[in-house]
Image 1 (cartoon, rainbow, N blue to C red):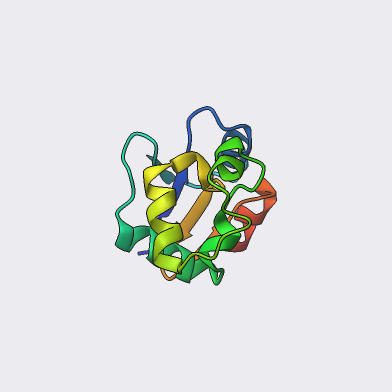
Image 2 (cartoon, rainbow, N blue to C red):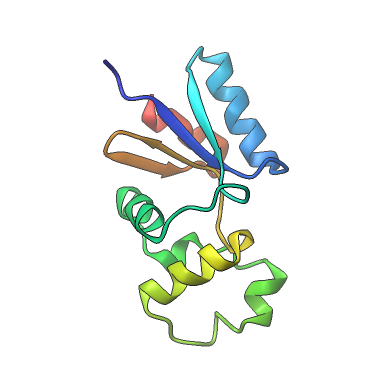
Length: 117
């Protein structure tokens, strides 16, 4: 049995809807997890970051007002501190994240989802 794709997203996110559209057009079934409503555990978020092969800092939305308010750019944070900040403030996290088996991608642009197909 092939691994199913899980899409971690925000319901109001345009990039998330575009990614969903690509999957539907390809006839790919997927599970949706709205991480604003069902927060990711610290372990799950760390696992996704590892599967994407990026650092927690690379997952941050640097254009968010909260990113500026918290002074994240100018401060040193350990990886676990950044993960804690993203859990506390989910808007700091880039989206959507797609996971399939042992691989995950940040679907920005949405066409990056094709790497999992």
